[in-house]
Length: 279
Image (cartoon, rainbow, N blue to C red; front, side):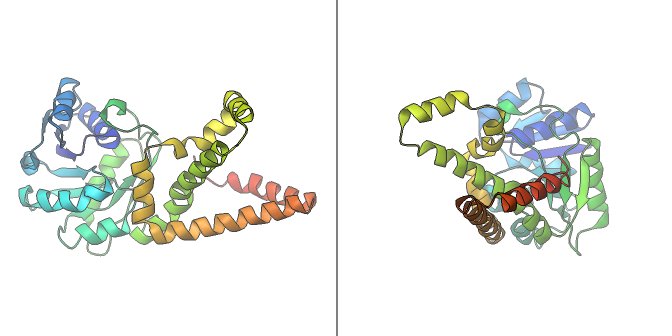
């Protein structure tokens, strides 16, 4: 199969590596000629160009650009595609993307592979990034079943766990388990940085271990990603942030009141609740 990748960053590059290893012919487009040459030199793609016309022969095209660039990219891309080409994306927000693209391209399937790193760019792309990770597809009533089946088969070939839901349901769910954690993690880092005693702060930085490493990881990622989450999933994210603030207020109150029984009940509940999430 001829597969196009528009956007050769972490996700696009990792998709290209895995799909090419499976025998597909992979065509990559990047806005930077240097990135295109790097992708060719490293054997990540078969062909690469800054010209979207390279996608003319692709049977499936993955849109891997940042959300902020997606609408403009689609405007420039669609005239080059064959009517039979299946278009899908990897954006972390689905309702807006589906609203943008589905009315203009009938063979569009909204998608979101739930994988990534704190770093970005082709340099950190790797084989096997998607193994045993969730890959969400968000078809709507007008999405052709054959297009959904094709994208699902490609996702399954990456050894992903494929899930299906409505775009709005996806956005509410990822607000809880992806977008809220980024904001909470960033707030943790910012709060630590406000420690006024430099001796204490320096010691804390030296003593930081797995607990701080794990809870601060996503807050230390690229700012662009956090901005896109907040901008394009604003309503759902604000609801989760409000709920989280209420939980913090309750914890503060319990500690101020020496209510250790209530705090223990809360921590026992969260200990049990955490086991319900699939990592």
